Amino acid sequence: MGELEPDVVALLRKYALQNALEYDGEGQVGSVMGRVMGENPDLRSRAGELTGFIAKQVEEANALAAEMGLEHIRSLLESESPDALEKKVKERREGLATLPNAENGKVVLRFAPNPNGPLSLGHARGVVINAELARMYEGEVILRFDDTDTVVKRPDPEAYALIEEDFTWLAGKAPDRILKASDRMDVYLEHAIRALNENHAYVCECSGDDFKQFRIDKTECPCRNRSSAENVSLWEQMNDGSIQPGGAVVRIKTEMTLPNPALRDWPALRIQHGDHPLVGERYKVWPLLDFLSAVVIIYKESLISSEERT
Ligand SMILES: [Zn+2]
Image (tube, rainbow, N blue to C red):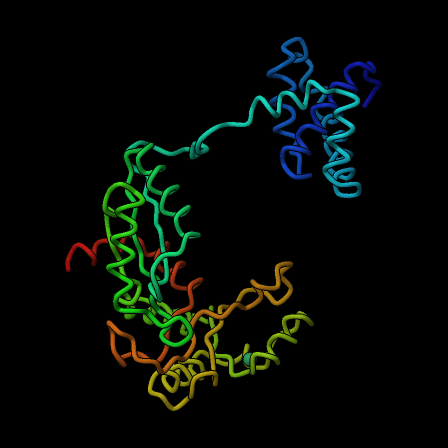
């Protein structure tokens, strides 16, 4: 890279700082490039030459943000290029952000409360934002009751109707579809068996504390290398009641070295012997929300078609 005119360097620095501020210290070269070219047409013919310089400025701005904080970036811009801050204020929008790549008529949103009681004030935001986005895009909102915790957040049979009523009042219209996670138990369990058979999951009998330590140490627990046949046999014992609640969970195999500790072999299903108000005592193993949601998303099509059949 050769030398750049000082005024161009200052310009690139301004956009890099502005971008770092707007994206919480994670400015992007592409985004800065777009803005430099969009607002300075005379530089467009030099895009190739400027890429490296922009990358350097973005790196510096992000490092500054990490080291000194966003307030420092803001005060730098205030003294060096106050116009870049005005831009940010001008861009602050009112109302909801538009959804990238959303197509009218094809947007589907879901509001998924646990029916262990009536909605709280905190839920209102979820209902209102989802309903408003559905209105903007002529889409639909699914009200999904996440009711697969039979013990800690045991479903309240009256809450289902109360929540539907409050949803309708807040959204100005009834939900387009209503699903109950507990209706899909066979689907979750089917996918759990499949994951065990295909070695994407394992039955873990470690205590919560022990596993927490494995997670901290980034080491694999002794259960991780069981054969799929052993896993399936333990799975059967979880389901027939021979293993008691707390005695085992099914974990999804990720990697124990992932940067986010919560993702290290996360628990997907656990034993609960509670009596579910809608499903009764038919099941002893229940999915946790992460697994439930993943199955709903991946197998959305098959779920919807089975929904239509019923
Ligand atoms: Zn284990």
